[in-house]
Image (cartoon, rainbow, N blue to C red; front, top):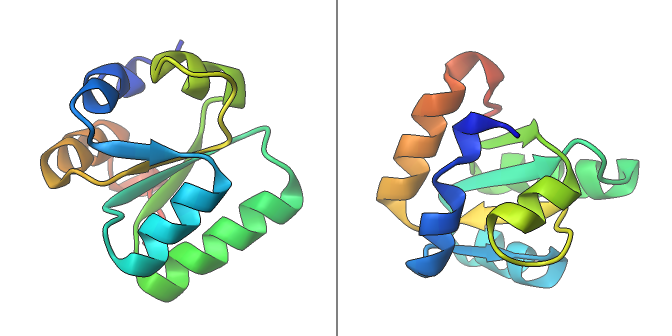
Length: 104
């Protein structure tokens, strides 16, 4: 398990994230997304779609973990996209990844 993602469960319980394709797209395009996590095992089309969307809307993102782990950490089934909407949680999770791994 990726220890850098340990706060995701707390963030989910606090209502500071959304997951799944439709909700993630909506959060990014409406401007509520602060940080996006894309699963390493997401399809190439999904990765490309969300990378492009994040770049266009200038939302930092990282490709990490796998969909089963992301889902497990937020108390749901497998998730390929998790969007942090809370600024404080996003800031803390970004720090844990360091700037070298984050695409902005």
